[in-house]
Image (cartoon, rainbow, N blue to C red; front, top):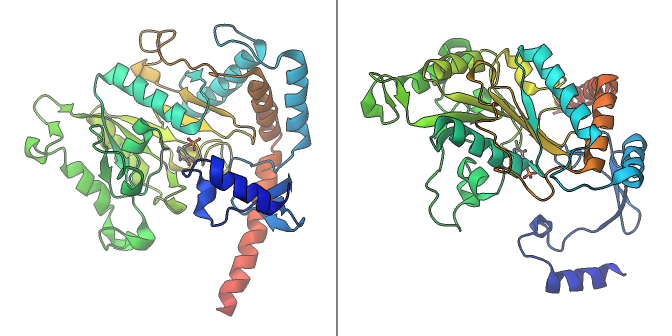
Length: 362
Ligand SMILES: Cc1ncc(COP(=O)(O)O)c(C=O)c1O
């Protein structure tokens, strides 16, 4: 079909909400390979964001494609009531990796997308804490289902949809370059953490009763390095200080690694840069094949017991697909061979050298 025909039909039959309509007219691509996308004239476009970091092994990765093809031939699909080997092996590898890092034995729960994984974590938090309010950061992005939208700070995503009774209490993210308090890291002594801590000093600050030590908020949803909010990282000691306050008030730390997990920051989880242990990790985009899931590492709180995750309460028709598990497994092996780490750091160094050169010129 010619470009004009595709666009004319798209105008008639495709949803207005598709993000293709960020551009007018939408851009059409015909092919992809490694870091490039190709338009209808075969013109290459370097994808600097690699599909919001979902495509971290490059487009059309042969090893991962082959793993999916193999699994499609073996057993491409299975109703979610039944078990298959690849799911168990993948879960074991991830649980072992987390136990090594955090000393906590967790469990893996699968779902079909980032927002859905966030939804499941919200349900888990509610089931465990019997509370439905959470903290989240200004600039944080957690998805566009109703629950995920309620803990995403941009009002843009909520303004058409009425009242959100579970709307998070949004706390300023420690963005030192544009400090929300007008401070400087050299002299501020983590003023932002102290401002947060103040909320727990008196019942009149509306969220905590110091006598009963009960907080109205169940969890704090964080991206340790914000993605959609502008690729912003927190200062080194921030999360250690924050976690101490959360522990004292018995509030869970939910670590959204959907965009930054799986070695995108050089370590398996971005939280490892900050030396704190999460209570729940939500992640997906293990490889570029729509790979989603979340892991819980609840440690002493033992919220991963069957009491809180009873069979059938979180289930979806496509809860997990065997071809996805196979491609995730292949991706994970890829990572473990340190290919991505090495590849990432070499490329990063090259990009930074280039940026330094540009800086000298401007
Ligand atoms: C940090 C973070 N959380 C949640 C999501 C939502 O994932 P999805 O778009 O798969 O629903 C995203 C998507 O990019 C994300 O970057």
